[in-house]
Amino acid sequence: MYIVAIAWLYVVLMMSLTEQSWIAGIGTFVFYGVAPLSLFLWIVGTPARRRRRKAQEAAHDKADTTPTLSSDTGDGAA
Image (cartoon, rainbow, N blue to C red):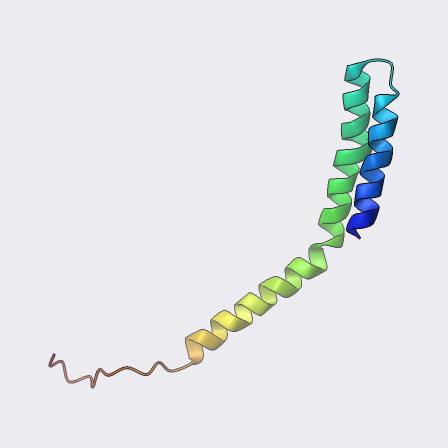
């Protein structure tokens, strides 16, 4: 997935270098390259973020339900 993103940024960079002015070049790079690519990577990465969040929640729930072993007898004497 990242190889396609890198290739697309390369193509857009070459397009922006051929623009008539540097303002048009920056605009081309931002509006044809960075903005659409960031949106695409955010949408494509959503399932991975969801899986990671569920795994963290499951680990947190498991840690909360696991009884802890301590040397404290609970009688209040230290």
